[in-house]
Length: 116
Image (cartoon, rainbow, N blue to C red; front, side, top):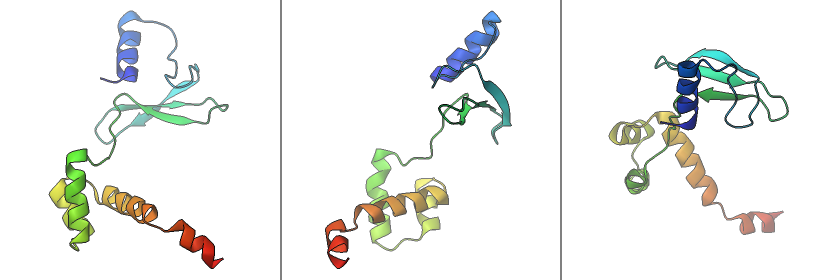
């Protein structure tokens, strides 16, 4: 469980007053609907730190390290975005963002600067 989940459970169990943002400590936290999974979303409205959406459980769309080699192998062998997403059981948006990261890592910045 993440920090925010523990904090909210403690909040509701003890009946403590205001919810605080775990990132900046602000009291300006409001409910912001529910996710597709039905989990409550919260929004920190502290303008000094920028507004941030908080979830009771953080789920990141990342490729696990053991699947990274398979991802690279499949992309080098010409597998399509949907094929990679289906085999690795990740979203197509994740595949696209990972491909963009790989593309940006492989740019030869020295060569580009010499062209200017």
